[in-house]
Amino acid sequence: MTTEHPGLRESNLFNRDVIHEIQRAAREGIYGIRGWGSKRYLPHFDDLVFLGASMSRYPLEGYRERCDTDVVIGDRYASKPLHLKIPITIAGMSFGALSAQAKEALGRGASAVGTSTTTGDGGMTPEERESSTQLVYQVLPSRYGMNPDDLRKADAIEVVLGQGAKPGGGGMLLGLKMNERVAAMRDLPPGIDQRSACRHPDWTGPDDLEIKIRELRELTDWEKPLFIKIGASRPYYDTALAVKAGADVIVLDGMQGGTGATQDVFIEHVGIPTMPALRQAVEALMELDMHRVVQLIVSGGIRSGADVAKALAMGADAVSIGTAALIALGDNSPEFDEEYRKLGSAAGYYDDYQAGCDPAGISTQDETLASRLDPVLGGDGWQTICAPSPWRRRSLPGPVVNPTC
Amino acid sequence: MEQLFDLAQTPLRELNQALHDCLPDAAESVWRIVNPKGEHAVACGIDTPADVQIQGHVGYYCAGMNKQAHVVIHGNAGTGVAENMMSGLVRVKGNASQSAGATGHGGLLVIEGNAAARCGISLKGLDIVVRGSVGHMSGFMAQRGSLVICGDAGHALGDSIYEAKIFLKGKAQELGADCVEKELAEEHLTFLAALLESAEVDADASDFRRYGSARCLYHFDIDNADAYA
Image (tube, rainbow over all chains, first blue to last red; front, side, top):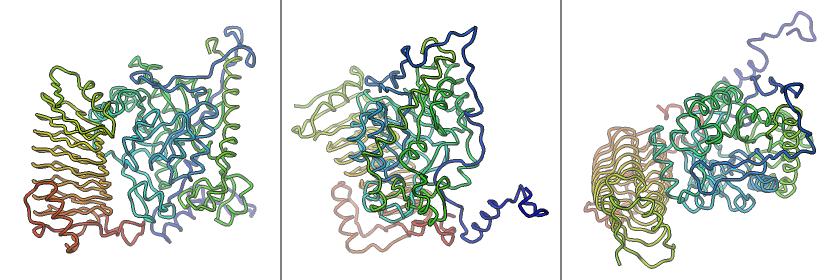
């Protein structure tokens, strides 16, 4: 920890980041709130490598031989499961946390590559429904904007118990982003700091959840796949209970998962990382003989085709991406560096999604900023980023191991 | 013509599918359901002007997300009766379990007996009238709409309430965080009297007290920390 000035040693325990946070807390008297996800080191897929084919494993010709990447999601009970062309879906992010343009861009990109996108803690917008060929509708504790018409319009239903950035915690949307439209969708006064509930209002445990899921199936005539999303905390037990509750699909969000606004202490100190969480969930499914019967979608820090391939190799059926999709739309782009610096941040560091001042027009409800993001171009960009991932995934199984891919 | 469904003979799925097959702009239909025997999700997801009479006790989520229909339960109701209802009328002749009318967006829910914990939790525009008493945490985080209680209320009434109105005739064991008594002005008396009349509950509006949000928790501020206590 020696600086450029010999003899000056920075404390590992009380380093400059820690000192800054203590002084900020003393000044402001309240915990720090920010977006993004965990920023500290956590074990991740980079710590795994594949074994290439050799004597005992027969390789495929990666770019010539057929290697399907499609996956059917939710066929345990639903009469109309999702059929995704790629095993990469878009995670739930709310209109409110994100601009309408960003939501539309995600829908356009997802539709172009044949996958699904997901609503969030603010209900379904017409733009999002129109731009998404396969849309998963979240049923969250807050039930903001929840209505049976949108439930029926959805292609799948996701009951959200938690998210990886804050398992056990409710959502936040600070007043800076609660404009008239967002507030009206949530039945709240504009401009207030909105706190979402952390627990569901009409069920209190796994036995109740089973009955709740049956109600949702009855409401939608048993057509829609029912997902249960859990924040990685006790994934072995939660996965088993989700199977018991009647889920078609389990969405497991690891500690690296992103958020629009959460207490920093919650992001960095609650939950378990994606990779060990995935292993526990797969173990639970295999013990119940439900692996590949109840599909497992994993999220939290998925950045590349290599991450996708490793998650699938560990037993996931598909992955969800959130932060990576926003980056593909332009989040933290160097082109906005000057504006990030005016906000006290910089390209590559920006995480003030809660503030609503995003120069990239993504995590904002400011009309001028949001209009910077063209949903058509944004959708094209994210599609272009996403499209190579299956190619990377396909490039791996060939020389690696899987003769049945 | 009345349609009769005996749930001792007919699967629930057939009943709900038949109700869902009625179009939103269809003529009014009349339904009688017998032998519900505590079945869950009875008559949920209706979106048609139906008159539904349920003869007996029902389980969880009866009349969930109801639109337009008038549903009368001639018995007790389990958890989450009329949860997230959008419009129409749901009447429980007996008692209701917890989370009655949870997150309801519109319409009227009448409970002629008592309601358990979390009645009217996260309300979003529904009006609820309870002829008896309600359990703890009723009106928790209620955003819009009203909760009328002719009896008493348990602990933490209206905890973290937003802009919903609570009218209480009896006593609250304790008010929740950020919930305070407010003036019962003429406009509130008029509103409450009309609501009681719609609910066919015989009570004098002037006997009630009104409760709502102190609005101290609307913004994160260290000076409001005591409000959470």
